[in-house]
Image 1 (cartoon, rainbow, N blue to C red):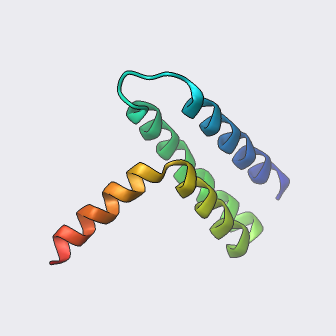
Image 2: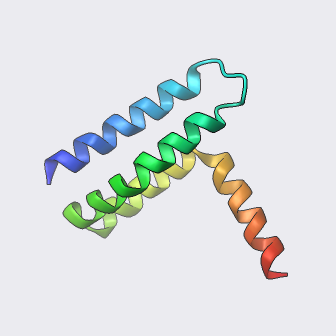
Image 3: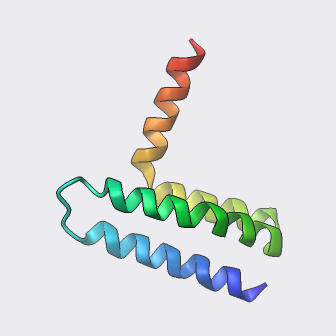
Length: 81
């Protein structure tokens, strides 16, 4: 149970550090890599530690990667109406 939590915290620290670095494409390539790594890691952590920890990590990840979440929300709203 401890390994997924440690890896999730390392992911959160890495995402924050990547966000501090300058980028020409406004961090979109890094966001795609972080999402590709973070989604399975979130599933593993939720499976091992439970839904409360999983939802907490989902909220933390969404706060770090907020612009992909905003664009997804806008796209979903356009599709529904």
